[in-house]
Length: 260
Picture 1: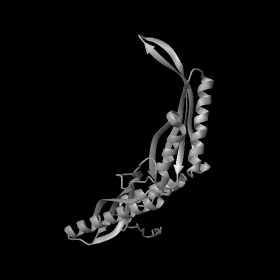
Picture 2: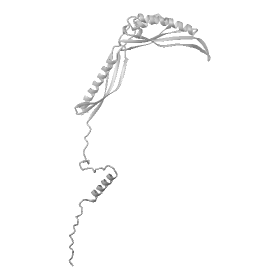
Picture 3: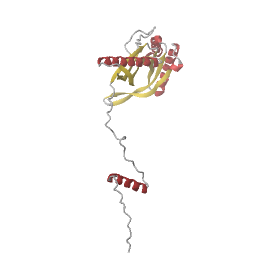
Picture 4: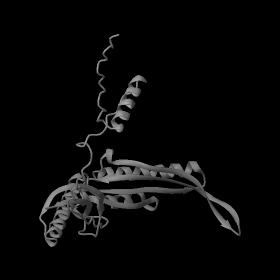
């Protein structure tokens, strides 16, 4: 009986892929089957290669201070009247008469209606105390005004007119000199502070062997509202002598410059 011939069998050579890639492929298939996105393994190009961070540039931080002065162009007078009487009504009537005299006097001195403002009005009992016992002495009525004098040279005359018109009832509480528009004065103070900061930064750059670079940041730390300082001259053209002095504004800034 003739023998059947068996075809030679061929066995595929074992795959050269390692177990790790097979496991990764199986994991990707599993993720896709579950509807989850597959995350690709990082490539060699995406991995950090030990890059060196550049050093931060050198800087210098300084504080600049500046100030500016100006002659005052107005005065604010706080004045008023007080009156004592046995009854509240009598005290108010006496006070009203003194107030009318005060207002007429300052108007004659050129104080405008818009520059006259009532600051306070009061009436209250006044008691004397003896051995712990109080005895009503009467009632005191008072009214206080803020008066803006736009001509500094007339401040003394305005004060004199108040005392002449009100007599014993008149009261002058304060006189403050100021500038009507402080913005230009503050601007000059800020400019002086900025220049002071730049000068200091330039000196520190030279001392450290660098050149001064660009301005990195600038912040304003404080700005002083204009205020009167030491008296400079007598502003009374007749009347009560006063000395307006000068008004001074200040500014402080912090600046950061790069060093080249």
